[in-house]
Image (cartoon, rainbow, N blue to C red; front, side, top):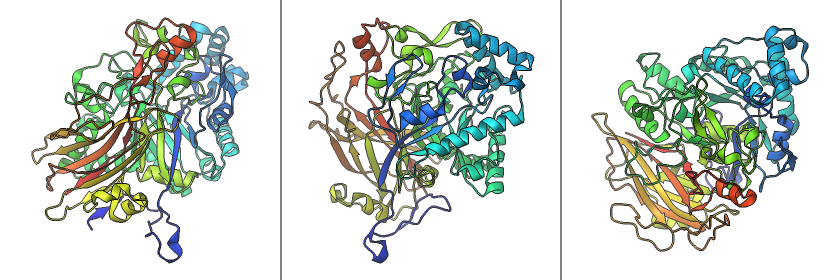
Length: 610
């Protein structure tokens, strides 16, 4: 059938439905939502600036409990998460807690005394100290390091995750953040272990103080798997503040090699496409024909305040990187950017809150208040000029996973095979399969998923060697968030590379709500409408659809050209968190602040390889 699904070696084989003992199918049937990028007080850039909530509070909120925030407010999720990765920075892991506890080894040092005093003073002194410490992520040269202290803190982190892990109900992962920030360019990765304490405690986190080169991280990951028999993966994030470094086509100034491309694809199967610090699907300068491209855009500078230049954008956004990866595959024989897509929060408050009406901010001083929208999110580290205002942070995002069950093993395996997708905080349900023979009735069948697995591949999969005179057929089902807004439309984003190495993209609307028409060129040019009342921070579901389904055949398919396809689902417009703040607090929101949002989901791609 010329179909191939990329799966890890240990993944379970898919069985046909209704055959003997396999009457109960083992294909992924559970849709799980979680956060893979989350900081507690153990992160130095969180604990030093006012976050006093440890990992236990993070897990308690995520699994549905009410907690008290750093500002003394009550917080509870509308619906619990299914899984959580607390990914505190490896660099200076737990330093803030150690300072609070008066750790003798730390306070015996000059730098420990300096940090302790700043933390006691708080305010600007603590903030400036946190900025100085995170600057060491760029230099790779720590002012304090004690391996035994690191091991002790790491063991505590692992033990807390074990305490809250409830297989089948709520999954906690062991993980951390690798925080290389060379010259202020964000090269951070979230590192996730599939394993429990018996394996994970055999190592300590590898961070930017060990190597600023991600290849060093990959070597550590390979060593971990060889030493323990466990499994591990890394997820790059925030490419939009890497100033073109995240998806560079050169490596340390030299042309990319096949070996590098293969190793990157091996260790980094996913990419975080949306989070609080901006959305990284695409940029209006990269996708001028896409009217939905300018979404929660951060494109000012990197962390060090180095201004953004237009040439950098191609190497910072998911859609352009997916195209670049196929071109590099054509040149070197392997695709380094063959990633699936997820969203996550990057919260530094210990609170994974991603709904607009329940958004508790990225940093402790940006928890709900009458003034937070006008606060500063990111300053230039030298001039202290405002680079990003607080109102520019989004309430994004979530990682959605199709898994057999809610366990570390099943969720990790789904991530490894890329059967995952991103949302900007909403819980849209979306499924897509690609094959060669799906008919129109496929999208309405009760056994939609079983049919998709039998005759096609899901998101994250690959089609190979098209049968004669056939084009890829994609079938999609999308369902609105049960506690949220109706759907506006479902789109296919196609990217391809021609024989000369030129890259191209097109957006196709394949299902729209409210009886609107799709033009012959595949676009619906009638907006869905807008029911938002900004003053009341309200909307109605009088427009849009609760469910959209579609079958789509690529009208421009060339079997000789590499291509990818992913699904983007958009909701109708709804109030943004800034509108909720204005209503609740009578807040004066900055004049240029966005007050509405069109939440969305991005699936992992399906690739076609000749």
